[in-house]
Length: 392
Image 1: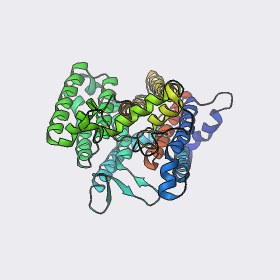
Image 2: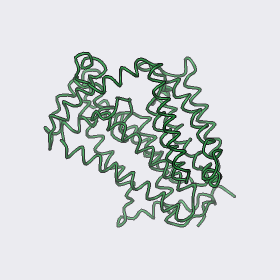
Image 3: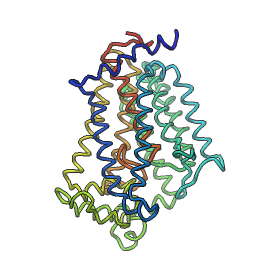
């Protein structure tokens, strides 16, 4: 089949998003992007002015990343879902190749003791960002092919987890514990949604908890981080591992219900590290108050709910790959959002994960747009009854 024939139905994609019926996934996405650009700029103006003599340095870069992300979204909209399924094995192998490449001396860029990035001049590529999406593609294809085995046999349960375990091992070498947790929980949830028995999931979760405990024993800094999280205001923690969470708590406390006003944050004035990155939600809390934080969380909740709705609709149409793919994308968004929000409000230890569409950073923003493009494409094919070869 020719490429033109394969992607011909996509020419109706933009036409299907009519003014009277705005695509809700794109609506939530661009609302989050707008709030993110606003709050990231507010959080970074002093830092940008002192380091680069340009208060809008980070805004300008983020706008470039946004433009690249929107371009990636547009390209993704024109790729049939069947293409991702057909290439799932190659995408998996590509993921492992990138995860190995970042560990090669001279290729991977080390930042704060972690080697997670490859410098591409324009932006830093984070292989973990690509890998988690491509592994979800592979898992969705596997669950569709081996659905009966996944539901009835142990072999169908542990085979996909062996793939995830190999990726987790590579994440540990970086190390990238946040992505480890997100990918593991996403995989277990996808397998559960495919119909795996609950006791198998619970057993695996127990083993994972044991692995985390072992990791904490082997890595003293993990214990220090947990200890600081439990009591960030302790004398021995407030100026060390608990400093960020303590300062974030101050920011949320100052914001109260409606905040101190846009641009009036004090914590962003060098008190709260990474205010424009991992802790941008704390600045939202300080400047826009509980109302602002609740708005952001509601938008993320709506986006994740929509992803699961798309998956459920696909499952009802017996399009299992599309269903598991949508579930997986929704779970990735949910995991990253929950960990970032949890760390910001001191419900979880600090993990160094960005808040999608809101935190500063090119790789995360571009990959978030890529995931949105995948979701919109899945929804489009389900709504327009496009079959598995990309035709109506």
